[in-house]
Image 1: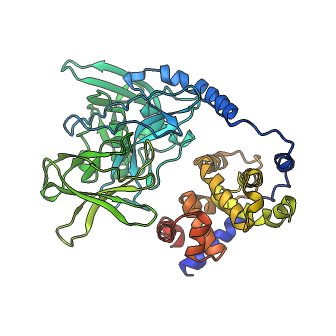
Image 2: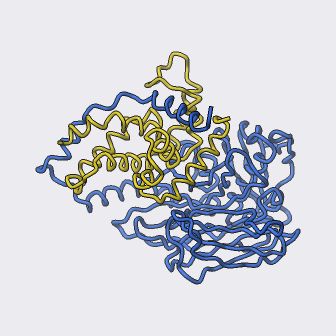
Image 3: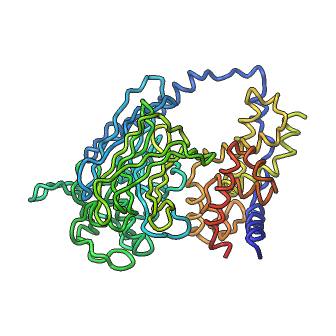
Length: 361
Length: 149
């Protein structure tokens, strides 16, 4: 059977599940009645704002681990500045997004920086890329959330949030953080301990997926001055994690599994700021440290902008890069591509494709 | 043609389309919401191609639909007690396959292979470029690799 016939078979079976069409709803007639008073947009906005504020205030007030969500106005363009890595690759610290002021009548959205995984299709080809995205949330479910990026990451399947196209998570549903604690080690390092539930011990379904999940968790929780992460189960260090029994007895940090990531690692959310001048920053370990940043119209595929950028190290070592675009070329829906031209065939290699939103992808 | 006639004419196919986009559990709600939205819009009386307009509205409403709803319902079904009655007859294998696709990819696959529209017409129906339609199709085929093989 050809692919086309198989897809048609799939659709036929999908369509066969269609419920009975809903009866013609009376509300439609109500909506059509000319004498029906139109709801004032201002009133809708005010009521909505009140509802969202009621949901959001506890989160705004929560200071879990010093983490603060960005607050942006909707629909006004966000003014959140893109964050930049400020330390070595061992620990990537992302500056907390700025908090913009909201007018009383504006809706607000909380934005949480969470590291997602670039969707490779059906299986990983090479090492997967991860990158942080500001995920806008209007509210949080009651269960299992204390209000921090790491909680958002492990509860993504329960949250009303649309992930950027081409990006997802490998943290399986069911993985939970039982407790998170913070301490200063004798060496003066900021350590957070994540006591995980039993589902975590099973990993994500394969060594690479296991390590990718760890990288997602480590980088998401390591934002804002966390130097190392200790995973525990039942309060005890984990001796065997995932499909291959990886030892997590020792604390880990952003450098522990960095070589299991794509050689290009964008570490700050790519956003259109108030000035429309986005920054693309991160780490790379590519041939001769030579990278290329492109802006591509997602609808037409037209390359609108291309700029070479050098990492501080390459060909066997990780170096940082930071490109501040000097022209407001990014529109919502554009894609930022970061890659290097392969010396073998001249084709783009290890491409990271980031869809850009107004304040987050 | 008044709204009720329009509704009766297209409700069936819109429900099938919505089923592909959001699954069978919420298709009826998406269709109802879409029609409420379309019929209440100021420009509705001037719309020439009402069918295309309704398709576009269903797509728009489906995109706003909670992304993980189908995932959650799938998990609920998998762990459901035997006596639990599902609201519709479900084909879990098919849902699991379709769940790999984004809403955009589902729409493109449906309109291409079920409605037999050309890429240009699919693009027009969804308000995107032809290139985007082709890219979504290619990605959808890749993501359905296991099913197709």
